[in-house]
Length: 466
Image 1: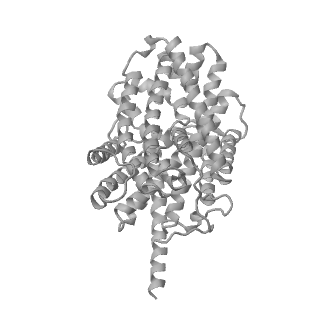
Image 2 (image 1 turned 60 degrees about the vertical axis):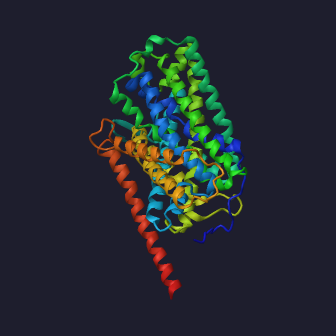
Image 3 (image 1 turned 120 degrees about the horizontal axis):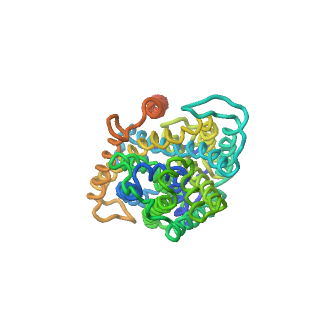
């Protein structure tokens, strides 16, 4: 298929391996570790949380292995969709479904961070918000509150609009800050924490562990940003696969350590009343509000790194879909000067701009609803991985994983298992109606765009035939 590039230019290879590592880690270590840790410990306890991250981490690692091999073998913008179309060249619908599903996960993070930003600012600088607009799910939404998230969206959109390099420099600095400040919390927990607070180790038992488990796909979405920008990496392809796996392992360890720091830093009663458990635990461990604010600042850095990464990755997915006539060609535009898919960036920026209008409750909605799209996309890519192993054994694989058939099969089985967790009747099922409406709305939009794209392809083929 011929690639369209209405900007007349292609992406530049401007990302180093360090940039790639920090992009992936920054995507995974966003704001959730600050705002959601209390939910993890309250539901699953420390040990239950560690088990949830261990089991969920296995899913992510096996899927990550399939992505690592394919990203090194087929380093093209579009990542998972490119792999699916390579494995099933006559099934555009499958490639579209994979891309649209993973994009759902990216959009859920972008919108999550836009809502999280005013929440975190309120913690540091309590604001008497003005301009009451409406209430959703018991949360009053004020104009000044929503404006903070909308301004953040404008800033992140601008950062990405003017080239990949400014975005990667900011990503590297802020990701390093997130990791270092997170480690301060961990050392505080080791030195000053109270291990009696660890009881009950399993929280509410199996149901509590599953509540944490369904958050895992959302918390770890980010490693798959690497395949989206593989064509912009100035390094041998085999290193792309290695960095992808390293970033996942680092994220698993980081999340479990943060859970430990929070579990020994807050009493069970404090856990249930804290709005930002990680920050309050830091304050308790060092007996200082200043330290609590430092965690919140790290949280702001995490918001930016994850938001930034998904604008980068999401805009490349939109570009890859557009050049294949799956969505309007408007998304295929590459800016002639900045070499970025600026139309896709603007579109994602607009979603982030309006997300705060849904209020604080949207944090949970986006985490849960976006997770099902992420896992569905992973499932299709895992199937494509096994198909390519069989149909193209001669494909050059600079990063070829051992026991590929076993890893691919486990990735498929674990993906199916995780999808079942979201279904009605499960303890961790999506909430009706709002979360299912978000899922249904997203795929309805996707279906409409798909048939519009199919209509354009048919018209082009008719013209060629004439």
